[in-house]
Image (tube, rainbow over all chains, first blue to last red):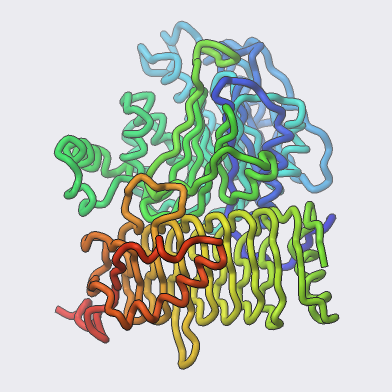
Length: 371
Length: 246
């Protein structure tokens, strides 16, 4: 038990993330150390990580991470996958025994490509590869009892479960991976159960999201997403953010900063004081994407193959600190989580409410970035 | 007493400090602090604590006497419900500095986060004081009932001419006063508040705090006093009496 014990702590979730903008990869040991500094923000009911650039040998394949309650769920999942995708490689997700990580589901990963021909299947015709994979994920999560795809991007992966994040990192052997972008989450579940699927990050394709707070607009967001074929199955508010980003950025083509305007728009009274061009943009975004607005307190880190973004709700009801050192950008709930792995940052600041911190990979074609 | 806090959990760190205080120790130097919560919480003795590193949430909460100097940045909740003593932060501080503070002083050289001074209150001879050298986030002095907040906007990270305070300044405030060097636009104020030029009496009230702030961080008082100050106070003694009546 070390120096921790089980007395009551006042807590909120904890976040940490880092990106090397040059695409240089670092071991998962680093992010695990950072999030462990915020141990007391969680309560052991959820920990998780997203890692980018970890599967260069399969960088053109979608990496499906799957958790199954039992052999039957696994068999049903594999039958479905065999019919819908080409599986180039499959294996158990490597783990090491950790006595604090218990009730572990079956954890497997599949490196896949969509089937070229969907004729004679129940999939929609003429889907892009990404859209096809979104449908694959939705079908497993909705239709196969006890099976969930918890990661589905290229050259990235989510690793999560019930436990403190430092134990989850040990369990998944994250010290053996190296990535140019990592996010981490320490969960303190409030309104929804602490279960393996409910740990953060939440993902779809290469989008991953870790979140501290509560999304009180969940109902509106969920119904809005359902119109576009996204189905929330993981019993937790945060799931909507991953799908909203996929919809706004990948499907509708909004730049990241404009998508952030939709998620955390300025108040009308602020818009009234903007210059005319900015006013028109903000009014249009608020009108078109009113149902994508995230209400309630939040600090989120979302990542994709091209970068890392930190965003707060419009009145900053959850903490977020950012820092830079050379080519690396750090973001975390508490400054101490950054200082733990970067004792002497070039710059430290607290991002303003609703103003995203956007850190992008400088050369998306080079380095270890996929495509 | 010097304590190397590297890797020491907050419970252990605070137990060491409290035990030493009980045994008569009055001078502490904490090295390699990183994220440990609740440092010096509830301590009533007149001890002096130098903190090197980044102390964690709720430092100096319920504190009633000590003098703390943070040689770096502080996180959220500094001086939560603090009763007496002094906190000086040489860097920046996070959200809700001085939450429900009822006495003592907090000096932050750099910027502070959101909701600083929320629910501050004064009582008889007790006047809590927060002086911020940099800029503040939204909701500075939210629901403020008493005490003094002074915002200089001079020494933080952002020196680009942006306003010193965010939006919703003093929302729900019904007592005390917020002093802003060079003032802020009216639209940043919460409802029911007014911004007025300071009187000579007001300046006599805040000068001792500014002098102490300047002395603490080795700054020149003259430069700080080189601009006009504005005072933000409730328009009436009962500014929200009709807010929900219609």
